[in-house]
Image (cartoon, rainbow, N blue to C red; front, side, top):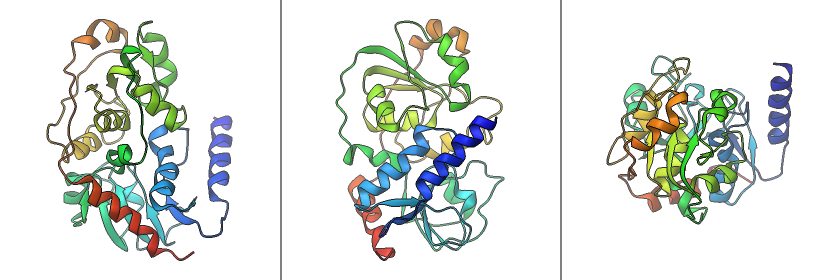
Length: 268
């Protein structure tokens, strides 16, 4: 526990250092998790500006990707965040709502975003990743079960650790013919890079249950249904799951252009 706290404080300190001309960005920084850790890579690339971590309530900042919408307040420019649980509403109205992750977050907040969709759907427009399948199947767990699940993945499958650096996770996903994932951003990246994928049901202890997944799928042309597959049955039952790619329903270039323009809201 003490080591985890140390890692969290170290990561927060690293990203909070003031950098001249940087854009303040709010994202979740805790245990290393590629979905959260894509935030500084993605937004700095899109806006062509350095970013720094800014999570203090009331400060002017961009609220990035992830289930962090409950942290929104009057200082936030919301850029694709979503609710983790509909019972955990935002702290207040945002400065502007450029995008929300999905229709459920929009409905529960009553906000009318300019765009819908997790920003990770735009990653192929920012990062090329060669699809070169070296494994028939890959498995990407939720970060809470990473240590436990690694021992249950068949030898001929690729175990993808959500604590790996974001680009390593992306390259690993693109190295599989099919992906089984309990991680939401694992499913999002697989869809975005056209890797057939299947969703296994959330862990009982995961706050919000299936809400964030259904929120994401509300922006896709074909929603997936979760499958209850015990880790001990992954090798036996996994190959029979329904693998397919869900396609984003809206215009990616326009959404990306709007996020690029966000930098103009912050002086250098």
